[in-house]
Figure 1 (cartoon, rainbow, N blue to C red):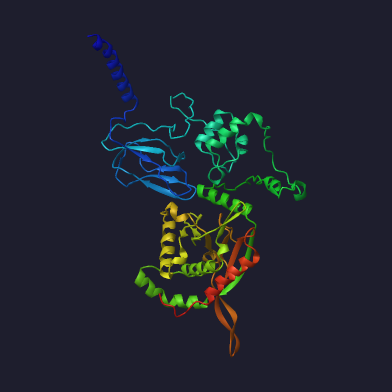
Figure 2 (figure 1 turned 90 degrees about the horizontal axis):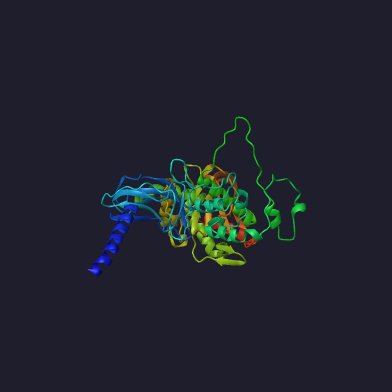
Length: 471
């Protein structure tokens, strides 16, 4: 009896705890599937939720698109991993989730629906307390980062707000994350040493100074740090267009590339008459046999891959004082999207593909890019980039290097021009198909001789194209 007397309160306490836990977590007793943010590429560690395709309470089929996410590489639709009812969402639109975070829960037996949460509990992510508002709904306040081109995750913003870090002060923190983003570790490290650091003065409107006045013996870094974007005020009747996410990424990437690499561009004119005549001869049969059209792009990429094998120091990257010589030849091809933005899918191991394989790879990547169906791995691993400015009727261009690569080739428009044709019987004027090749390269590691010889070699391969070649 004594034993039963002592166990009874324990039993009641256990029962009460179970009831309370069940009340706190109504999902515990239902069959549920956690939907986690998958790994979407070697260097991708986080993604922004851009749009939920299903609402809480909606039925979801297996492999049905559930949510749209965006990384700094590509936008993706994530399919559902189970059939059931979407009962809980952990990340709202425009919030950032880390790879492996649970972003939603699907009940497979029609369990209770739980209201979406505004605070995110994820592994190794600190939850910042929310301030209550009059309607009882918790909200997380964030510091206003207006007029900033930097991206800050909701967590970093919340920590900054909690610690009283102003937007101007936040701008001074050096980020170690992807594309220089400020991470949780960066801001916490900054807070620890904040008191011992000199106060940071609020930025003032930039004043134009002579270069000599701000240059120093530090290799020019102080000069670059003093360069500020001009503040542009709209005039009456002007339309203000907010950059979309992809345009912001492109903008940052281009500025970074010009900042990092001293660009030099060499030009060569190539006679591609043989290629034009050959393609006109085979394109109908090729399309009938392969179900694919053959454009000029794979022909040019074949010549570029051959030239890279002749000049492998074009196929490198720079890391500090080290040059990384790439083993693979992965050719990126800049592709214009219907939105007007640009993306660079990559043909992997282009030197190992024959012309038919290159044509199919190019067509598939271009098609997927236009239809927003590229996978993260489709735009990663490029070692050299090709851009076709001739598509827009441009004769030549000075392309910006796609970092961390060290060179990029622009293909100009193919034009009919009068040219001097040399023959054993004498010279004469004839009509030829010609185009300019514009080769931009990083002068830190590619000198003019290498950059110039490489683009000349590409032109030689194009001009020596066999008109009797069979596919």
